[in-house]
Length: 498
Ligand SMILES: *[C@@H]1O[C@H](CO)[C@@H](O)[C@H](O)[C@H]1NC(C)=O
Ligand SMILES: *[C@@H]1O[C@H](CO)[C@@H](O)[C@H](O)[C@H]1NC(C)=O
Ligand SMILES: *[C@@H]1O[C@H](CO)[C@@H](O)[C@H](O)[C@H]1NC(C)=O
Image (cartoon, rainbow, N blue to C red):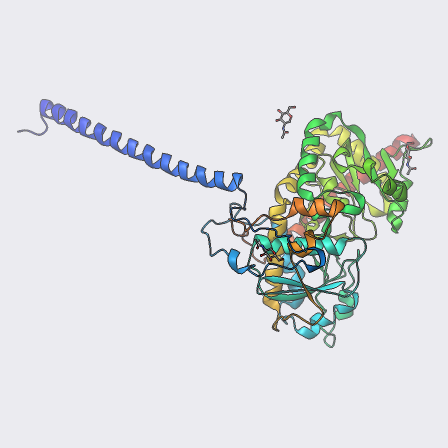
């Protein structure tokens, strides 16, 4: 048979067509079956993760020991240690600001950390944290201001509940004061000693203190600031209530002007007065009056009422930073000397508008005029900062930051950590069971229920090129704003003189 004859081709085509069609149907239905299986599986997985966030196993909080006799459970962490439960972190790579962990530990990268170096950090430290076999111990040297130390230690204890048995043994010194103290100029030159490693809440260009998330993530009871998780939710809901365009078109700041920084006192001179309107609305928080009223009028979630919010450091960096950035308003960031663990990632013109430290009023006036003229762009800057805060500064990442910082730090230790005389074991039981009032409330709210089912996010590698490009971006953004600002004032002067 001529295989090219019309009929035979047709009939063969018909038969082939049927076969192909049947095959196609089979493939398609198999694919549908498989994909339903797959989407079902991934759907289930994400449902597990979102409905039972990292808390599948519950670690009990046993408060049956009374007050002073309350002890830490002996079966922790060994009963809760999770052998790789097979679910990688849903977020996989950590946010960019984790890169500065490497930068903060750079002074010890080539030398490692000896016991002698660490002991030299003792003079200004409030406590020594020891982690051995997954348990935490504290040796207290002196009491910190307010309850900073309590909430910091509470945060560390929660980290241990989140990742039981996953933290390496370590010893570290922690300073709870405002300002960083280990000056790099004291440790320069061939004969000088390696600086002591000291953990603190902020750092600066001229110091090498290691920045650690501050106490307020777990609450600040003295001024009635709620734990970060719930406050973040409230601010988000509040942002939805007042659209940017409907907000007061001026720059707002409210805080303690007399906190010991000259810069804040300067800021008061930018307030609107009979003579001059610098576009700033400045309110001094009367600390003792507010304190007697339980800081009811300082509710942070209800302070996102202006299109522009000023951030200005106090003695050192200010806890207010994250609350201001979360507002959806454009942050007017007064050029600062200090940074906390995430500040260095923020970019001018992207997350905030830079304000000259040495010429605040003029700088603020221009920023507000610019924003009211370039509304879309101003809104975008406000939104970008809030998005960063909502998505990349949520508690999951705070814990992961602590995890990686402690982990990288521990890798540098050249001695075997041990529990010294005078150190006491701390755990959620010894802390929360003895707490009362607001402290009890905050602790019960922030207690980590059990081990995370996801692993910590993956650290970005140390890359000096990436860090340098951040610095360049910051420099360029700053310069761009300064140019605009100078032109603005020049043209105003020309107008005035004509
Ligand atoms: C709770 O702790 C007490 C002592 O603090 C202990 O006697 C008791 O067995 C513990 N209960 C549970 C369920 O672990
Ligand atoms: C924001 O408000 C709108 C209605 O004004 C509502 O539909 C939406 O769900 C809200 N979004 C959030 C995140 O609350
Ligand atoms: C700033 O000006 C406003 C409006 O006049 C006033 O209510 C406020 O108290 C002033 N702030 C300070 C710190 O004086």
